[in-house]
Length: 186
Image (cartoon, rainbow, N blue to C red; front, side, top):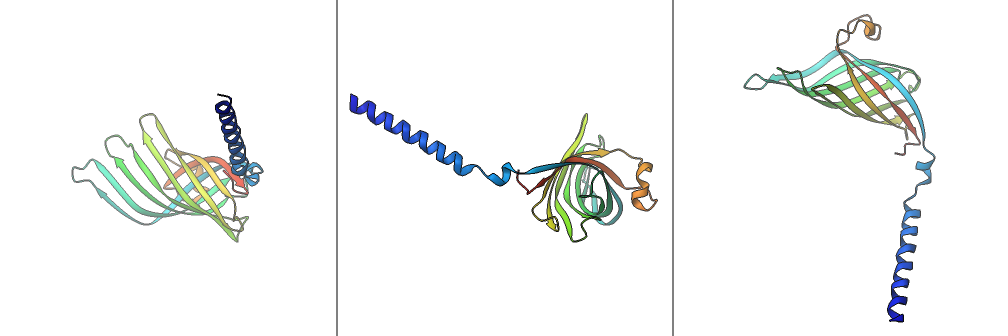
């Protein structure tokens, strides 16, 4: 019996040691040192360069694919203020306006001419809610940085944002609120 208890104690000690070693190996000092810089951006699309659009056979859903748009970002910080290139896709219910929107986004900040952001975004519009997310990675002068943001579409008209499109009315607009992560940990 004593030998059985000793074996169980030994097993428990080994399991506890294994848990401690695993936890220590999983800790990443770089992630612990990640700094988060908050931002609040207004992203607008100024011009459609190309797109494919069709309506479902029953006429209820409009499909947009590869809508390439150029635009601009007005930001409360230097990391994002600049020009954009967005590729958007959507499936929209014509009766309700509800739908799914997704695509890619590149931002070319004025303050970092040797760098840019690139990544993905998605937005869902349904009853009582229109929201999404964007995740971008830094390249060039912004290498090693990541951004995470929550997106809130802004409903038209957009006269307050025409200055971002050289005085022309934007096609679409969204507010992005999030943070830049340096050195890029989660």
